[in-house]
Image (cartoon, rainbow, N blue to C red; front, side, top):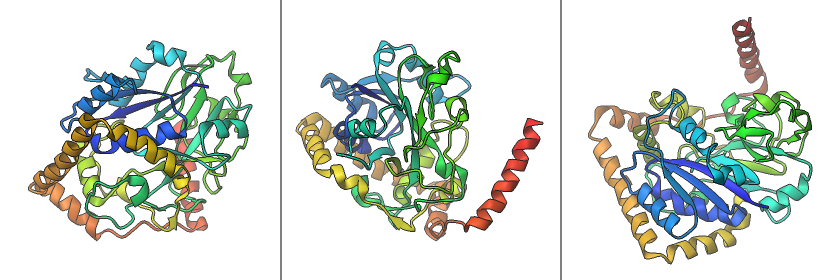
Length: 349
């Protein structure tokens, strides 16, 4: 059973080997990676990985359509033979790691648990900074273990998902969060399940991009999301810009919505031995290890350069002064949700 992961990256070479090792260990056997405007050697690392036969690398150098860089990549991917031939597809970001809680913790085990599913929503579990200020060249999965609680009532963005879907013709195009361009004659046969195995209603088949919050969405699988990293890495992320909303400067709003550190989750370590073996195999290649080291140094140098600029120095200072995010009590969250629904109804009218 073949699984294709689609990835878009910019200036993230320092994290690529860990991400690739983990997803190879979990059962992905094909990777399509788009890069754009890299200055840290990400594109060169991807070229080397492509030479080794481990992935397909496409330079997504633009021009970009109105949907932005990531949407442009997905549009291009839809026409590629590699995507058309894939059996299962999951678009991901380099800060997202699939985490399966059933069987042997692989994709095969997830399919065995949900044999009738043609689409499985993998809901984000947000991992905060774990108190880390400075970037270090140590694995993300070993460093950032503090996260949001299993049941979260606000904000809705914390319940966004990515969709692992069977590429059986029901949808013609991959999308950032969900497959696009459905064949309406086939939708009735689609079987959508969430990360706890529950059957999902029809709106999920065509438009939903976030799970219902206020419930456990992770019983069988979740998507560990590390959108912040250390505070230093967040400054570099602000410098890099957003993949979807490229014109939006990252600031404290994005940070506070995601810096949950109240709980601890180390379940992703269930595949630590397999991941370590995959990483070791990659590091046997001298070119890859050299490019990784160069990328680590690039991050340190770039951070020092950014702190010479008022805007980024101010951002780093504010991050240092901002406490971890506290989950809202259920009643307070419901108060906000009611107003959010009312605003949505007004837009529809």
